[in-house]
Length: 186
Image (tube, rainbow, N blue to C red; front, top):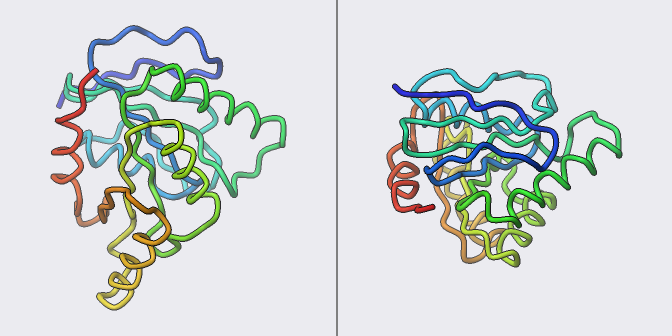
């Protein structure tokens, strides 16, 4: 597996120039962004923590020489100051609005798919014209009945979005996400 860590960034400029398409991984704190990145990379490149809000920078990785993955700070429950939260928001706004990233993967906890912060991000991505996918993560924690209810709720909460279940434990969703990412061009 070819994985290269490009660095951690706290300011909007400069980002290293890369020829591969850039993919932003966005979601609430502790939703499994780093675990999903590791699943897609095939190795443990992103640090995983059970403590919400550990990712405090934009971390960039070149994965399989095909994509640049951006692991963004989580939003929502992270125990950070309002000033830091605004700084995170400016970072996200800049990178997604300046076309640094060609695609966004919005990770949502499949056990709680209709949280207002998730729906707000989806609406913002849509209104900003950012192509994106909703990944209902931690699907291994759902039984069949819960999964069916989650799918229905997600379709209502994220209208018009492509929605995929995923689990870093069972590797569910890996092929489907890679297939979508293979169609993204810089």
